[in-house]
Image 1 (cartoon, one colour):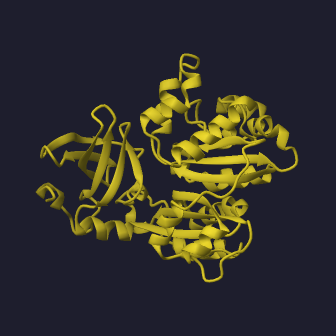
Image 2 (cartoon, rainbow, N blue to C red; image 1 turned 180 degrees about the vertical axis):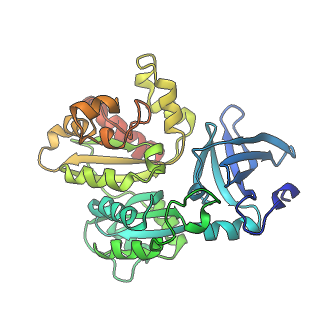
Image 3 (cartoon, rainbow, N blue to C red; image 1 turned 45 degrees about the vertical axis):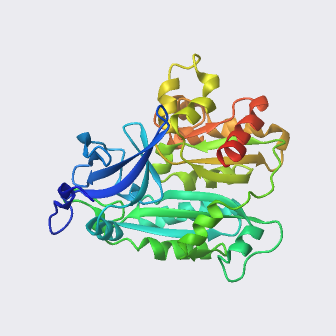
Length: 366
């Protein structure tokens, strides 16, 4: 039963706390621990309640990185370095408030190379960031089997499915602007126009989306490959579309793509080569576990043998300040903030490319 404190509400729902069920995998005890996550929209504070022990686990504290649009059941969020999987709304009040405050849409883009342009157009048209809640490259065969669209594509084409969310004007507490101004079009109408321009559709069947996220992987070749990871802070700030659009415009092709949430041991494994080498290692691990990331297997369209160095050039130096001086159009210069929150990770050395691609698309994807 929901702790009675969760029922503290005001008529507008803006100074009340919202409550969601969540789970945390404790790697030390190898247990799944269940909590109630309380979120106070008016000051961006959080609180956690241990369901099994029936006591407060985390006292109320402000946590600016967590946004209203992040509170979507079925996704994961990071709260003070703990990765929490949101499983359901904890009460009808929260369900009603979040349905009004957060708009979510699912899209199918028939050509995966166009997904960045579609997302960038949605962000530009909706007046605020539309954050990715889940994304994956899918084969035409998997789409046909799912009956996702009435006239599925044929052949060996690869498309993409993506779930995006944006806070509505109703989701802005008093004194704070919504991510979408009141005069902005609804996310659904903007998304419909953007995806229709490339022959895609909006999907209303959430079960079909979930099934496609687990579908067999499209065929891919790891020769002449490299890996790009859009880091959680860039995902949360709505930069996925612009980054993918710039990637394709830079001469690269998306061979595969999927969103992931990493547990700390997985992030440590992936970044192990930097342990003891970079002083930011522990902060880099924390950033990769801070929320949803998007891993992209890429190859260069005209110079595949030079994919790794060319992608490294597109990303720019690790330090965004240095990138602004040397390569002002680089991804890290445009979307990065510091050496940890520098928007993207990319493969450094050709010998590491297959290992990094396989880490996400073979090990983590199983």
